[in-house]
Length: 600
Image 1 (tube, helix red, strand yellow):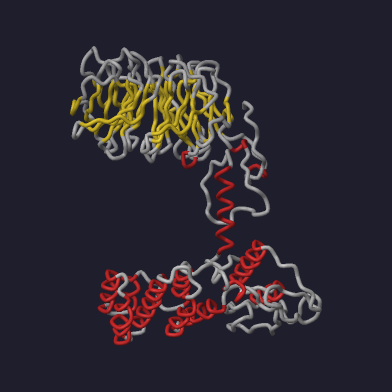
Image 2: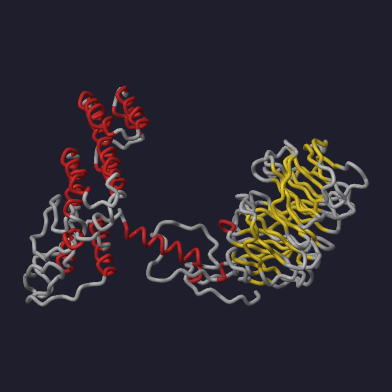
């Protein structure tokens, strides 16, 4: 319990006085109004020694027989108050009484107890008077005005609901308005006088109506203005436990599922630790339909399909089974004379654009459902169109290459705009629909606006940027930098955040990705035939996936299924990675210790 100068000893000690068990609805010796609980049979007539506890002195609680107890540490007193508040919430009021008597503490200041009871009973004049007592205990006396406003607002609304329009009008004119606080809200409140019935009032005011529910919410708001030494914040113990659980999950390197903010789904008796067996470290499928090097792979935005592009001049589209997460062959898109080194799904996943290597001057826009070629675009045989990115509107795309082409086109391949002299290595359209990010041969990423023809430098590296991708929120960029590895940049602050270790990156184009729940993880291929996975906040890999026999060119994490990862390699295969095929019951509960970084 936090001390408040002289006020600390004024109310922190109970005096360990005995009292009879409180009846339902009565005020208990702990200072709180009771909650009915027929199952609560604990008696608080006597202490553990069988005798009556004598009053404590001014500073310390005493044991039976007058012996002075050792003063508990501040943290112990806080814990006692937290437990007592939780027990009261459960309706175990007699147990609370006994705990307070034996500990010698009060759960809250007596003035706060009166205030609480008067608010819950709707005795607004008494609650208003209580504020004068609480004012001396508050760190910010100015908060009294805000608390008065909240009280009077509830009083005003309850009068209106009861049909007491004149009384409500009097509160508005004589009590709320003179406070000179939030005049805009007072104007809104005055409009509620025109409500024809109670249902209309509750709907317009977004208010639950007179009663325990709305008064409890009011009390929760009022408590935020009181120091915790006077009145604990509502449900404080539950809040602390939730924070502890969330922190453990955030620190768990393998946690890859949605964070449940509730406590019902976890055990508080064990520390949280996910098993590596639940992480996508295990080969679930090997797709061998391509007959040459596989240069690219990309899951669709809805996670139901995977597209793979190969040196064998084909694109293969795979369907992801919603239940088993197994991939099944869907169709082959053929005719890419130079091979397929890059793929981009349209925002609605209806179309797929395929690009080739440096000497390819064409790109192909496919209707994925029908398998028909919608557009084959080529501006000049001297062009190099090696990268592409869709505008968020799904009606335009940008494309370019290292020979100085940088175009914006429509769905039919018509040229809408062009930017001269930009040697593009990789492209990305931001969610604002105006800014296009392009990495170029000057080892940088610049932002281009085709509407006002402005550009600006965002990222500057010391070595060539072979590829990059951007997080869903547009804040982070993941770069594969020649001879350096994988770098994480903050695009807003324009600073380098992480240099991830382990990966072998030369001058081959390797594509990394964000993935997992909340994009907490990063994966990249490597020239040493491995797939590397890092937690976003840690520069050391948490997994190295082996199985490929040549350079891994590209990885793609399913955006809907956090436990599904694909990798494409020069060995001609695509590997699908997932959790271990057989999980123990204990593993699925997420309490096994995390495994080491050994290869799967």
